[in-house]
Image (cartoon, rainbow, N blue to C red; front, side, top):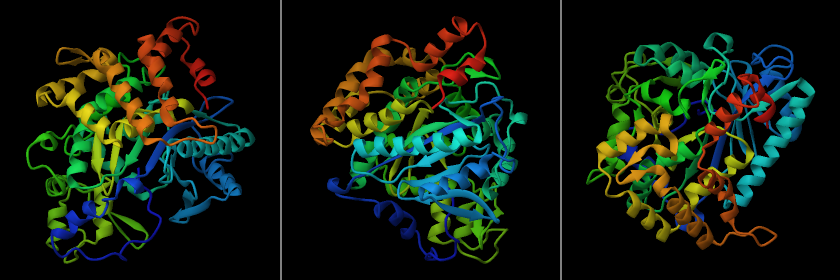
Length: 456
């Protein structure tokens, strides 16, 4: 989730609707300026007892953040507390229960992205070894109840924690018990955004299946392969889902702005503090009728904050966010951007990917989305299952990466980053199924063994 790094009230006041739409248009870039922004979260635990450390305790999250400053990271302060870090590799931030996130810098190619990930993981391992802290790559805490987890001192999280139980049964699980990998990508024009958005939404369940990595809840199998993905089905229906209007004629910046305006607000940020606006209407804000700030009009910063509080499977800001994957180990952090860059950053690959999914009806897309958390690659599509098209889609991504021609110092292109996904399809088992095999086999039903085998 986003972390504020500056005080609000410095951007332009929104006086007309065109300013909302311009936010998206200003993201347009020619292909030579397209970049890759990769975000990944991991669980933090004490190595002696697997407990989730609190913010303030010795050797806890605050000390972890402070220790990373030796690598050049600059603290971000909220309410007198360090709640994030900024640096040349992007930003480090905290999810509500202390999940640790790197939001990487926008980079030209996957070689740079994977090097950035490697630097970050090396840094946190070095600090973690000193503090007795480990880092776990999964989509959901395998053994923690909500009550066992700490809460980080971030103002927006306090508002969300109060609001989530009003609108769904699993919003608190989303906030406290899940981790994800995400990639942020650019577009050239409104038409290019539309095509990428549609392909991204239609194939997001395939990414969910390939990265499914959350089969345990409170120490036992939960009946799902991606319980993290299932959690989103009852988090807050006003701000989640597959967005059927994206596939309708006429979809573009304006239609997405209308959708975002209908998403209830969470907060307004003023003078370093979050004002609770949960459930209120941004449309009222545009008219100066927001009850918590009567007579005041929103700024562009307010609009950008609000856009960050919608959680569909693909999200539009001034770039597109692919949001369907569970957290996982190092090689899958690099594989997710490889999957989406290969499909979306080459015109021929993008057309080929659209050809795979364009005939699906919205009912078929919704059935796929609802089935994939439990069934993974066996989730149904017209004429078969996701398994039927997985190799074809990876071939398309491979072709797209090869066409980009981005090579490392040794002359290798970006296609090798797809190898972990190729192995998943070849084996026929998604990561969660391999974990379940270990749980029922070598682990003898002891889920704590995951800390040994899935730590970074």
